[in-house]
Image (cartoon, rainbow, N blue to C red; front, side, top):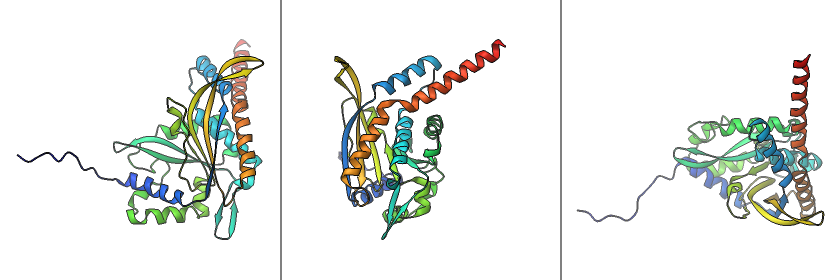
Length: 277
């Protein structure tokens, strides 16, 4: 009888090779990171109230994406990428959202580009993300029609990603701004430091409970751990700090959710009025 080896060999599949190639390209960028916390007690309360009233669970990630798009509208030059000696500034804002799904028995982050977010409401972003999360394709990229990526030989993946990151068509489709929310489900306060080739990447960490003074009284508040990363070739430290601060203000405000709640309430009241007449 042969002795047990004490280990087993598993294939390092194409999905993992794509993730590794993306990380390798991101490691080459000149990236600066801003780590912060944002009080999202108000927005979380609004989401909970909506769920109690309607039974619908709204996406916090979609809310983050919508607030990020509103911030980018105030900093339009950040919606750009470097192509040689030129800076390509995109008109529409596309935000690439990484969500985790099981493919071939592995949990793989898959990117989905939410296009023209600057021209979409929170409701539209929420519904588009929910549709992408429910996708059941068997291959990486099937949610976005890019499943052909799996046919690229492993030794060419890194070159392909480098070329795609400088291609105007690809950047218009998938965006130069990314959001990854895989750290949101952590049970302790945590921040992520992403390896990224995007101009701006928002890495969403866990929600931490903090004691804070509100109108002179001590209350428990929910703080979202965030890392906002910038391509330092395009964005300097001071503008990046202003961007991060404004992004935090919009996240804390809950305004995008209140707009949705207002539309929902007005629609319900209109239906009641119509029924009564």
